[in-house]
Length: 209
View (cartoon, helix red, strand yellow):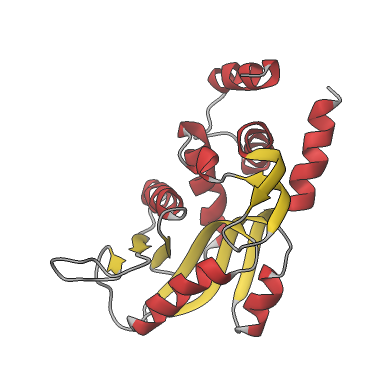
């Protein structure tokens, strides 16, 4: 563990991730992304592309403070008409759960839905896990990192096939490699908390400290 990471982990006890203002919380989450999720090297992405950097979103969303921050930051981006958040397993599982739980603490009812890549081989053989909602219920798809946009689109298609209304995808990070343009072509709204430029510029800043 680097000295910077150690200092960051120790600093987490000096404030509450549950009550800190969202502007400050966003900066803390950006710190965490740069320290534990962003790596440079030679990587093969799930999209089949090669990249000189990799962002492991699960290092954030499965982190105790990172998961809490994820839910708190995403919740205000989700319209009050939305009744559920959903995403493709495995990456979106902790994101939709955190957002649903934070919503409950804020007095909002926001169901969490997990979309399987393949139908369950037993029981109901369902693609979607979670509460059964009325037809045309508005659902927002959540993602950790968007590259081409194809991964979250699988969740969108499954949810629409189940009768839900899906018009928006929200991601923690946009790698800006065509995902936003793809969603626009599909008639979907798209938001991202951070862009790859946000992360890389912040990494450079931290390296100078």
